[in-house]
Image (cartoon, rainbow, N blue to C red; front, side, top):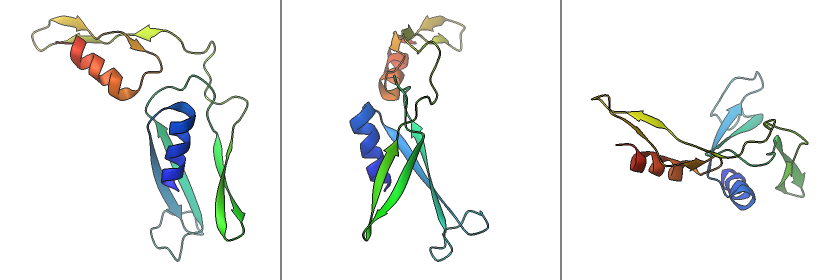
Length: 123
């Protein structure tokens, strides 16, 4: 299931995500005992800002003996007003007090590339 969610975000938004699974018992307490699990919750963490609305929830719908994933796209979820655009830089201060700036980073750049630009630009 986690792989399917990851694949959806990669194909739709070209972003890396982290998917955490939390399982709960009938009292709403987190459990790892497979017999006690009555609810599964997937937390999806995006590594970059998305340029459009994202998915608010993913429903699991039983179809015969297998489950099917249905992603529901809401009309507005975490949308900036106005939408985010442009570039930004990090200001870096060394131990000696020298100031430098990272290379320009696009607002929706993947975290790996943003990190590389900080390491490259900041001395």
